[in-house]
Image: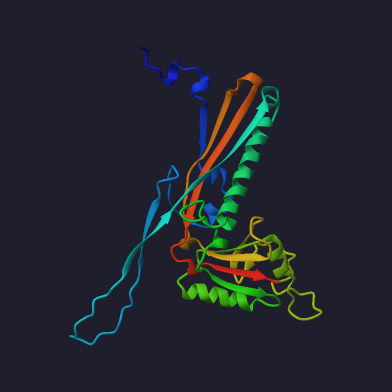
Amino acid sequence: MTTLTTPTSAAAWRPDQFTYEPQQVLADALILSTTTQAGVIEGDQPVIRVAYCVDDAAAFVDEGDEIDEGDPTLNEALIYTRKFAQLVRLSNEQYRQKMTPEELSRSVARAMITKADNAFLAQVAPTSPATAPVAGLLATTGIASQTGVATNLDKLIDLEATVRANGALRDTSVWVLAPDTWAGLRKLKTETASNIGILGAGTENAEPRLLSIPVVINSQMTTKTGLLIDKAAVLSAVSDLLIATSDQQYFSSDSVGIRATWRTGHVVPRPNRIGKFTLT
């Protein structure tokens, strides 16, 4: 019996597949820009085990005295991932139209970014015994929070102080805000009947900042909410974006199938280093 191999099989049995490094194609996705990537994993069952240590306190000791033994805790956090995908079907005639493949590529990239951002920010926690898709940051338990931000930035100053006290790093921090949250903060005035905003006039073309920390506006944030994320406190696993095209899948209708898949996941070992607030 002849051994079946891909070089001798029809194209329907070996559709071409393309891979794109996510940092190049999907650079705007939050999971790439606001986390520390711990690795790449394939499959729903495997996990990435992230080792981290809960420190014990050091203490003064007199010269010559016995030093008490420390008791740090060696712990681990697990990164579970899930794959999301998009399948586009179009006629061969449409596929051959000028710019159609290019525009579809951009559309797929936008769809993947939107889904990745929604999963990273707003995904609800899985019901046990399910472990994934993992909870988005807005649904993560144990993060620091402030509510009722209304007329000034005092509560945001307190929120930043809280996550700093818990070990969050300023140099790796970023605010992620819903569009209406950023709009609401920009409307805060220095005093009643004044047109001068707390955040400045807002007429200059400058990088958005809040308390001197960069701001990212994202439509997948829940309305009137904001997050203060320390990139070092969120660990992620992100695969390459895979694009496969087949002109045989829909042979009977003379159509082309374009499939995109991407796998992501994240974990927050120390959630109290992430801050959340709501605007009223």
